[in-house]
Image 1: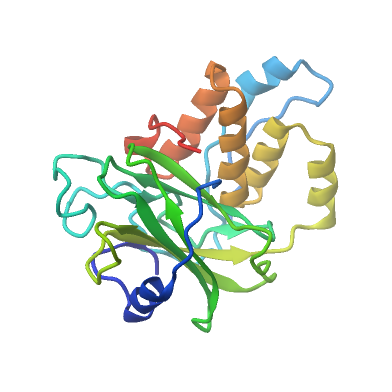
Image 2 (image 1 turned 135 degrees about the horizontal axis):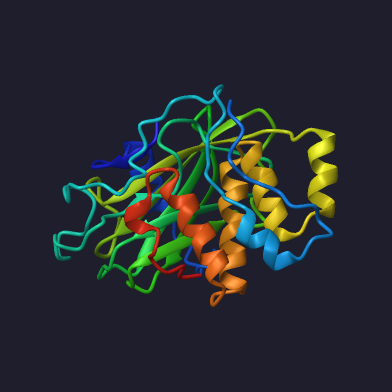
Length: 259
C-alpha cells in the first residue's frame, strides 16, 4: 500500500541514517483523451485533447494519500507552521497501483513550504531489496518536485513491483517520525503498436497515448515536461491541471513545478 505515513519503516529509517550521498535535484477503462489526426494544426490538437486519467481495472488498489492530506500530524516538520496546507503528498492515483513503461521513470511529490533543505529518497523492489537511495536538496519553497531515477541506478524490470519513499529531513538527520510519503510502481511492457505510435507522436499525442494505456508515471512526466518547456501556454497549463484534478489532486494542481 502507498500513501502518507506518520512513521517510517525501521528499514527505511536505517537506510536514511546510513546514506551520506547528497546530490542536487534534477528531478480498465479507456481515458477521455481525444485525438485529432497528426497532420492537423498542433494548437488545435492541444485545445482538443483532454487528459482525464482513469486507471486500468486490473490495477492493485492503493491507500495512497494522493489528494493532499487534511491532517498535519507526521506531514510537516515540527518547526514549520501547521497552517501550511496542503501538506506533503505523492502525485499519483489513489485507486490503483500506478504503472510505467519507462526503465527509469520520474516520480512527483508535492512539498509544502518548509525549513528543511534535504529529503531522503529510496527505491526498493518487492523483496524489500534496496535498488537506489540518495539524499536530495530542496529549496524550501512550496511546489512540486520531480525525482528522475538516474542512469546509474538499475533499470526497473518488466512485470515487477517497486515501492519508493520520499522523506523530509527536518533537522540534521532522518527521524522515525520524519514527514514523508511512499508510492508503488509497476513496470509494464507496452505493446508493439503503442511503441510505434509513440515514436511518431508529438509530445501532446504521447501524453494522450500513455493516458489511454493507464500509464500514470509516463503520462504525468510527459505533461510536466510540456509545462516546463511552455510555461506561458494556457492550453498546456489547463491540461496539467485537468490531469491532477482527475486523480483527486486539485489542491496542488496550480502549485509550481520546481524542477
